[in-house]
View 1 (tube, one colour):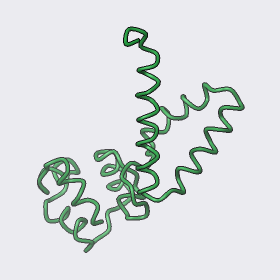
View 2 (spheres, rainbow, N blue to C red):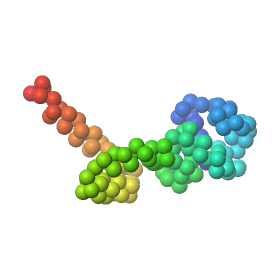
View 3 (cartoon, rainbow, N blue to C red):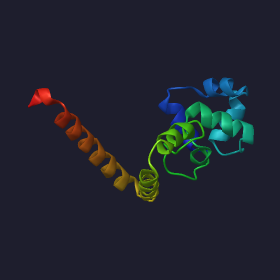
View 4 (cartoon, rainbow, N blue to C red):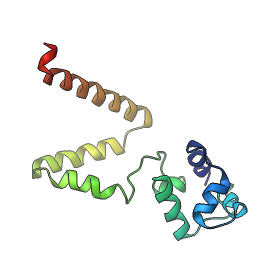
Length: 129
């Protein structure tokens, strides 16, 4: 699980810190980072929750750490469920399109959405005009 190293280092943690959170030795945790042993189901859940990523990301099955996790799902479900049936369908289609994009395409799309949101905020602010 090479992604563990990236996640741990991004939080400026030592192996000892993560091992303590899991209730295991540093040596045991080190075997997960170096792919010498696979973490069990309960340990995978703890790691995914702690780092706020999906188990698929931990296992290298998805390229992005920002995959939808169980802890995020209720938030997104509430947003989608509060929409009209037509908007739900459109949002679902957009999510499918976004999920199929390459990382570069997704970054460009996020940039576009950010620029569009900024434009809308400026347009709504009557004091500027």
